[in-house]
Length: 424
Image (cartoon, rainbow, N blue to C red; front, side, top):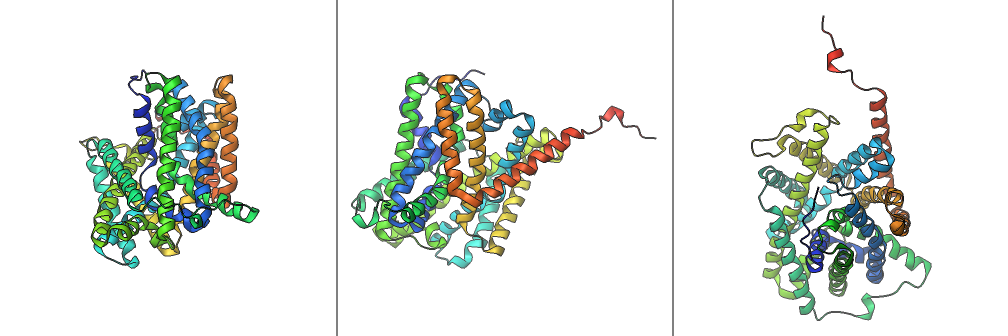
């Protein structure tokens, strides 16, 4: 497979920024301030420092072993097919914890637009999910370009708000942790902030597309991550200054509330509409991505082939329906048990973090000797983050162990070939 070497450092930076900016910008800054208070600023800096070596590991792997399989492919090369397929199941399990967060964020902004209360969020979430499923089935053309456009609009809006807010740097909203309890509070917030950098495995597909990879890629990667962090930090400062954070519902609407504080009620509702469109298209695209994964697993007979059927337009309608059912079940369980979004975010982070950790460990063996120190540093970074996330890693570990055991059982008891089956 040959990649077209068309990217320069500025284009690479733009791709990095659009990869990491989306629904996270609408909730993570407020959640981090609610968790860490005036230490949130440093929590973001710590998380960014941890993620840089992991990003470089994926970049090096993508340059040396380009594959559409991504992380699962790299893990399979070292740990075998059972581990590769178990990682596929782990990716799929994220359906039960991840999308519900983004759908509820979208519903919260829809509630702002319609001037409804917190009690309406569940119904609006279900309506939004149905719309997202229809969006996925339609398979909107040029959705990538559309998403890029709306993300650019979101970034521009945040920068404009930062200028209008007078670039707040009050001493009471930025404090450096100076004792162990303060540092512990700061580090615990990184477990939530990590959500911002989910999707870093996309870096694996970028390295080989640069005109001069050895010179341009590090500039694009570090520059892009720096821009992302500055964007989130600007949002953190504004949210802390104007105190638009608190409970889950307030955090979900934080940017709209900030716009209202600065520009008034009418602007708040217009921004809520834009934020809803961004969240809707973002999650709709991810649902289609999950459906493609389900369809791929069905084609490999990992799940019933019923889900391998495509529509006349090439859309995996049955797989989309299964993904939609999983998301609906997740929303129902969240509503019934009153599950906090913070918990769902950290379980999602745990699943991705386990995948990233396994990838970094296998990279120690896969990469050339001159890059191995980066893989060792990235592995250490992932292990640190695992400590910060704590017990919310249990979901990911349990799914991976069960999936690995299931794949091992299938290999020990392979299905009887069709030509050996005789009907009397």
